[in-house]
Amino acid sequence: MRGPHAAVVGAFSLALLALIGCGRQSAPNGAMPPPEVGVVTLAPESVALTTELPGRIDPVRVAQVRARVDGIVWHRNFQEGADVTNGEVLYQIDPAPYKAALDSANANLMQAQQLAQRYKPLVDINAVSKQDYDAAVATAAQAKAAQEIAAVNFSYCTVTAPISGHIGAALVTEGALVSQNAATEMALVTQLDPIYCDFTESSTEVLQLRRELENGTLKTAAPGEAKVTLLLDDGTTYQHPGKLLFSDVTVDPTSGMITLRAEFPNPDHLLLPGMFARGELEQAVDAQAITVPQRGVNVGAGGVASVMVAGADNKVEARVIKIGSAVENKWIVTAGLKTGENVIVEGLQKIQPGMVVKPVPFNPTGDGSSAAPGPAQGN
Image (cartoon, rainbow, N blue to C red; front, side):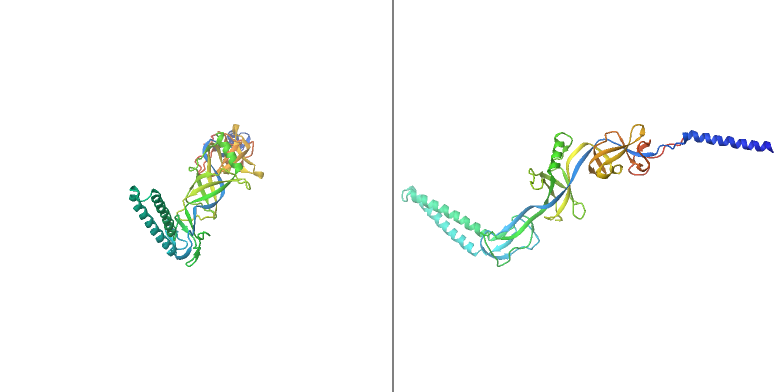
């Protein structure tokens, strides 16, 4: 009995030793394999730098319709709140006195011109003096000027829209007395398409931007080419992009701000004068920007930003960085990182500075295709 039993024990012992040896071969000293992390290798890219600024909607043109003659308003020919076109009749002022003045001026002009015409052949035969003829010609010219003034005043009795746009409330009614001297306001016409939005920006920020453009760090986005996106008060984005027209050349001494004007299409009249909005302006282009996914950046107390970098020998290093503007889901890094470095953006919860990791390219789609583990080791 002792012989077979001893043989079984010996075989079991040999198998146990083989298993221990195999385990030591796959994980020396019992150490765990380095954790796998997703990294992004930094490379320069061209990025449009945007700035979010507060603004107010302003009309392109506003025309105050005022009385240019004295008289009683006969008719109002427009509907309040409607769209009117340039030259459309808005009011009719009693034309009777101005029609009479025009008829009188026409008669005086005809009489003066006839007298000058009769004198012209007579002066050639010395039947009329040259002085009398010159006086007749001058009188005809004066009559012509008086007739033109009378015609203009008569035309002012018909009040028309000076521009195309949206007309507001009627400020006078039929029967009201309007005055040329008081320049009675009768209506207001506002052009709404296109429409302006005036933004304000700190003069300090503008100065820094200009310095970066001058030293070649950034490239300019020319007026008329720089796109502007409008963010409305309800949080939605206005569907029509605008374009930057100009930046003011003066600084408001009370606020230290300058004004930037953008133009937007407004076919549906959704934007109205006086509305507040925020604009995202493309003011410059950084052709060599270093960007990092926001998920890999930790912003701590005091706004201090840091990342984890897989450095030499794949050791984890904590790095304090400076970040600038946000571009989509990335931060623009202004200091602390350089091209070619590997920033850890996935697996941060299982690493500490000084640890050795296994970096693999980060796969933003999350399907695991770029972060698949390597083949199993044999014994």
